[in-house]
Length: 443
Image (cartoon, rainbow, N blue to C red; front, side, top):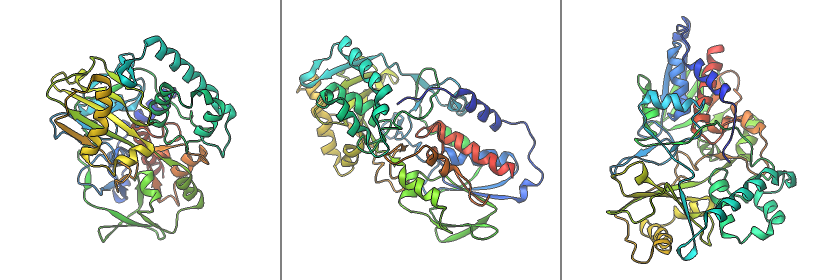
């Protein structure tokens, strides 16, 4: 769910990033290797360089940004990963976006039209009443939860009357699975954990990658460098990348949780047991995004179009891109969890057929096919293996903190999966980078 609070904490961290303190005179002799040029790694590298450290960032991909990737091949900025600033009040991304030249648009959640099967419009009051009841359920379900039971198991036991309700299935998909992860794997106790900034939500209109590009300015970022081993057994940390070994006094590992789960990087010695347990227990969500363009718009002039199909997690929510790009006839839609993973085995034509089946059910059989489509495949992307972390069955909130723990004052970890209050968010990733830079500075 969307998370509320703790704006002052983040603002203080952002302020610390802008400290007027002069670089430490002893820092230039200290070398830091940052593994990963996502927003957390770049935030850490930028602050450390400002403090006088010698910093090298190693990035496996061909450009900076990590999961903040923007595809402009169709003439519009399609953000493959993060798209929104979730709550602009006190959110460090708000100021950062302005500095980076990122343009934004307020997406109004009230600007929505909903359809059931057969293109039958769902009455506004029906939708609103069901939504209110859904939120009431979320406020209390954890009272019936247990560490070994999933959200789905407890929900089905407590609310069997809604198990086959298509509108409730829509809410479960777009409000829970989208944000948390597979409901049969999400903790029935911790599904509502985390904090949130207040204020409206804004979507990036010229690309979220403006932020990592801004942060990377002036940094020594080496792209196309895949790290395979981190040896912290000696006085220096040795990082193996593309067959080359580089040494530093400190290393910050910022790869996504999915990469850690795949053991893509060998650590010597092995990571502490608590950290390994956290990697295993926390979940990694799959959300795939699809941008489709047409010569002419045929859909409602609302920000969001909701649809309640029989299948869960399948192209049930459409963002009207035309609302913030008036000259572009485009819709963005999503696939979550197991269905999201299934789309990665499907051809473009198969995916478009499935999306168009929903749109034609809403708008009629004569609805034209799209001219182009862009898509993501996050679950099989070797640089991510998923979209973002979530509280799975067996997770404990301390697991996020365990992932954030430094090892031997030499090996540090950042990324959204290490931020207990703001996990699964771009702002959480950013704040984690500042946090780890501060740890090294304090040493």
